[in-house]
Amino acid sequence: MNVVPTSENGSPPVYREIAEELRGQIRSGRYADGDRLPGENTLMERHGVARATARQALSVLINEGLAVAVRGSGIYVRLFRPVRRHGARRLSKELWGQGRAIWQTDGEERGYEVDGVCVDETVADETVARALGLAEGGGVLRRSRRYLVEGRPVQRAVSYLPLTVLVDSAAARRVREHDSGPGGIYARLAELGQAPAHFTEEIRVRMPTPEESQELRLAPGTPVLEVARTALTSEHRPVEFNEITMDGSAYVLQYDFDA
Image 1: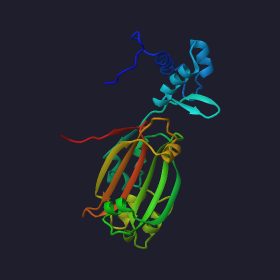
Image 2: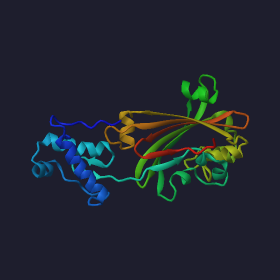
Image 3: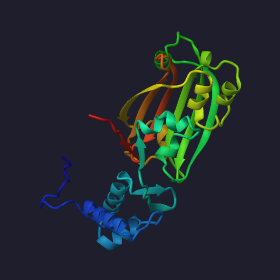
Image 4: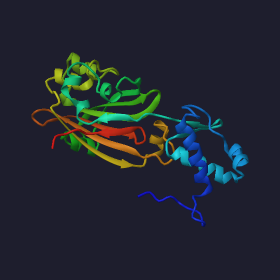
């Protein structure tokens, strides 16, 4: 149960009342996505409050994800329809097996892009080695990238594939490229005879590191969803381990399953 702070006379603090007024104006459409909200000076004059109170009111909206502070410019409305992430459907072979990206399930028809792609070879750390069943010091191919929806960063994903799986072939060479081709790396693994047949995901919520906050442009107080996913073949051989960090305010996680 959420407990709303109250003043000594039992009414909400003034900064909460100001935040509620602004919130209502955003939801009514008076302030649209990208509009600049009244600044501290305007709120001080309009409501007869101290600067600290005006700042608190704006901070409430920022922490709720309804606004974002732009350094040296002001506070702007940030309305963003959460990405609906379908747990099972997005990883279906029917999707990547037909050359489609799993993001076509998440993003629906919304514009998304990938940037910051980096592909290199490295030595698996303890977590990666354990997930992939590798001996200590085992080599992996690492694929790191950031995803944006409608220009907003929503997640960073880092995939690891055992080098022993990437036997020299056109498919293996494509995995090493920035664009791994239609259907992504799962389609390439299938071409290598290592098609994913089973996935496991573990999800936890935590606060972001400073680097994650900067990369995902997170508002203060925004948590991240940390997803650890392992792809296994029909023989339960792990062929990919993916560490995903998601903006907790940008997602709705949906899981459909039979009773």
